[in-house]
Length: 139
Image 1 (tube, rainbow, N blue to C red):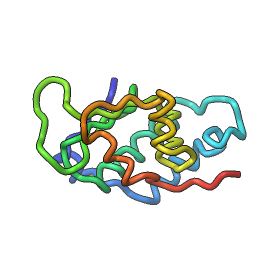
Image 2: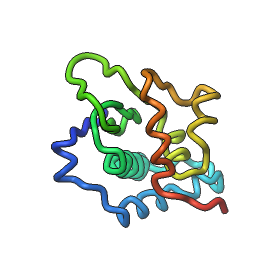
Image 3: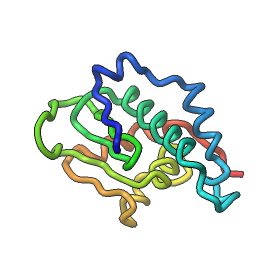
Image 4: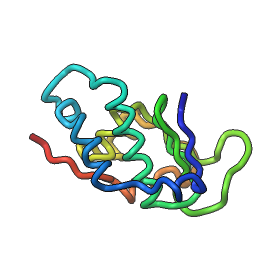
């Protein structure tokens, strides 16, 4: 199940840079392609959740929904709040793509162009302005 985080809950759960860095480092070898085995689900979930929350802290608001199923969905980017049905601005990708984009190992534009990111709405691309969330060095 995707964990939906509203900004009211976010205020109680601000991201912590140290915790986010540790979560990303736990899956860093896999992201860099140094190991082929997918990380255990709790490690992958933690990395996705902490980086998504960090992005939401960097771009507070409700205009865009970032979805990384099955782990997390956050609202971000200032603008009108969406309350019913499918949000007008949605960015969705799998955990591996999200973590590579969130760490700067891949660009948002490249992943979008090759179809690994689904983005709808005129403001969806605005999340790229806060990427990478946590820079990860190659090798």
